[in-house]
Length: 98
Image (tube, helix red, strand yellow):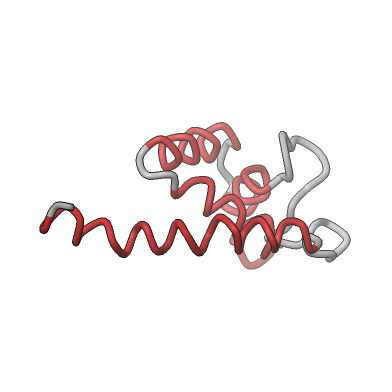
């Protein structure tokens, strides 16, 4: 089955938190555990897994077509902007020190 026939939505069945990993797994036709392990690895190595999960939660609609509410968008802004600034400054910190 091709990806075009499967919608990218957050399901109500098989989800742990908001259903982002389960939705991605359903879309790509893989086991949700694989997506969850990848998310944990990205979180442990730089914290980008948290940012990716928040972005997925904000962007992916649920099965009814509704997107996440204002609290998730606010959390994305509060976490995402400082994290992106950290990632941009990281090479300069490594190259030039304090």
